[in-house]
Image 1 (tube, rainbow, N blue to C red):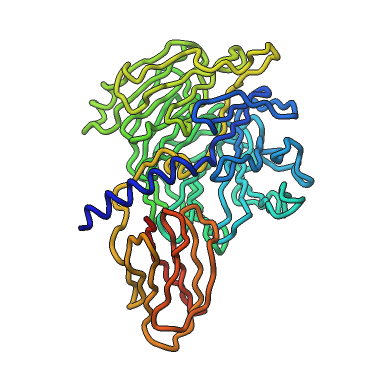
Image 2 (tube, rainbow, N blue to C red):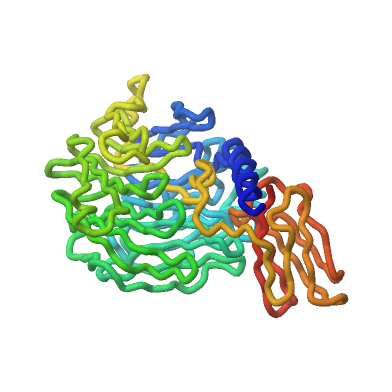
Length: 465
């Protein structure tokens, strides 16, 4: 019966996600370049403004694919391609590999964090600002700006949502040592970092040591890091519960490294190198030893100066080809090992009108869960059982109709907050009955029910089919 329910849930959820999870559909990057994936294939999209973003950027759209805002880490543009009223002076740097990343503020329906990094490992460090989309007639405004978390960080930034209560991990790396800083973001704000000392030292002896991308795989179990002039790529285990980074796998490169991306199924790792020769590489990271993983190295291109890599909602990985090319490369079948993944060098022309548009070095970065949902990837261990904590529970789970919350005793007054799988507020209620029904009108997906007695909060997970 549970296997049937799992099949039914995955089938229903896949249909829902394919039609609704379009938060990554609008890309703005490089020299006035833009793409729109709403139709499934990338179409050129040029904003009203002319911008130059040499490296990192970020954007976010609604689940239906309507653009909300985008940023280069320093400025924020709204869906009308105009600067937000308070949208200048953010402390991310347009010359930072991953200058910015956007996530929802947990337990809100309309607020978003923009996390930013400085360039070259300087003292600007990691900061965040908050966008409120209820302001400025629904076009958004920034209510908090440049809240400092840690100084002297590298140009790396990655984000993943957890399976507990709609919380998130934001991971950055300190410049000058071997420390990863993992910040859990909850309904109570950005928590103090979990610091993991592991892997190579990200030396600050030269500014280029801070360059290069950092990415989670789809399920957040692996964290990959490219370390530019250190000519090294490392893949770590990531603990989604504790935030601890550990167990480095080290891959030495023949050139400086910049771009990094996992295949959607997380079995393969793609890396770009630049400067001396330049190449696009594929590794099978599921093999049983470092020697076997290194032996799986497959060159896909020898074109000089390949830079950022980014998975898109169409399941393909796009390759930035620097200022010198108006084209993006694309890995068409990134789950396929070897040359069968079919890399196309001149796949997307960003400048069909001859206006001088290019990708430069960067492509926009996203919360990994948006892509996981868009591609209908189900991670191992997704709960399918009724959930109970100290006698308080939610059932049936999963449910195609409604859920029941069962309390310990009649007269117990509790506040209930329901959050969706991206941390957005669905509803709140206060209950004191033994059993309460809810969720009949919820869309298919995963929900978190936060139950509080004013002193303690329990979190339960419910799946709507």
